[in-house]
Image (tube, rainbow, N blue to C red; front, side):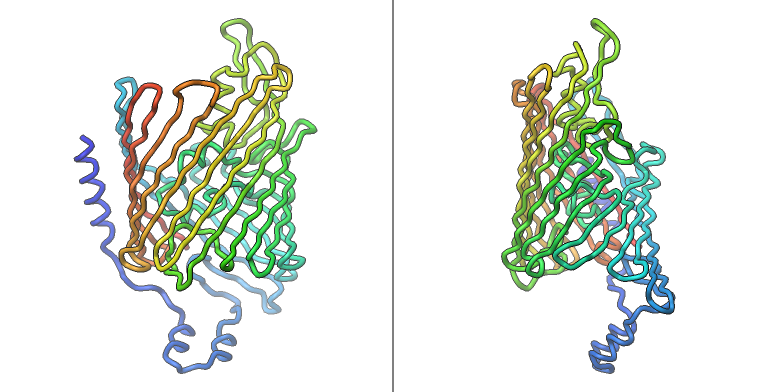
Length: 426
């Protein structure tokens, strides 16, 4: 069964890879390359037009005085997934899925230093309409060293979460990242690029209740991140699609602090507990490190209590001449303030890729491991995945596929997950 699955996936990707092998260029780009126009003429011709289209950014509308601009684009990720479970108690699944269908709105107002963004994921209207509205915020650039965000955005925690899903080496992020990342939240974040991006920092204060959720307590969440790029600014993007002429290295670390409210309903054997008023990913995800423990009654169901949360991660990334590698280590701790019960979770992943055909065909490999509760024995999970990416127009139009084996130590089972995805960004 599994051999047939791998063959079918390979065939699907081979068929889908037949397409145009041309990168879109503007007229100004072509004239500049042929030496018809000078650099000064190129810059003049490239100035904002009242109506324009930029690949990957969408349609661009600019006012005559260039004080206002709107960019309207979209993203579609059409996906096929096959889950083949070893345990007889689990049902195998073969399904087609619209993983993400987004409307992307951004631009600036009055000055190019005041920007805005609004992202709506239509796929979540069906899955979970509380998470349809994603990034909605205003940002003001005082200087490169200080930029202020007000609104809802990604919590700047975990390199792979900060990296856009459109620029990742696998069909989706590691299951370890999914278990530890906070997701989106509303608040204020200070960001800065120092020494032309050699050092980047973030310091944020958020509601603490998660995506599109109002906080009902006086406890907020705090997030801090620091990244060091010793060889020069390194953008967030997996793989070396640009075929970097010089080596690039990035080292980063993030810290998240919050206090959550655990509530109890029912009595006796039917009593259940949950984390009240929190839509954060590490709580709501089916494999979230804290949510899993609360649903499993690790903190008990005797009484409601506050749970203090500390979560830390460290990451690295490097790329050069089409080769790339990155990894992250996660650590989380939750403590019941009334019960005094501790939960400690750990996890990590490392992945590498190489463009066998520069800027066109990439192969990737990833290994991930997680222990969701160090206090419980034999509950770790590991996964190894292989992936292939074919780029027709960079990340704007690409085909991805991956096959992975996830091992659960508790019941000694191995589950096969195979996925294929076509991505359009416009």
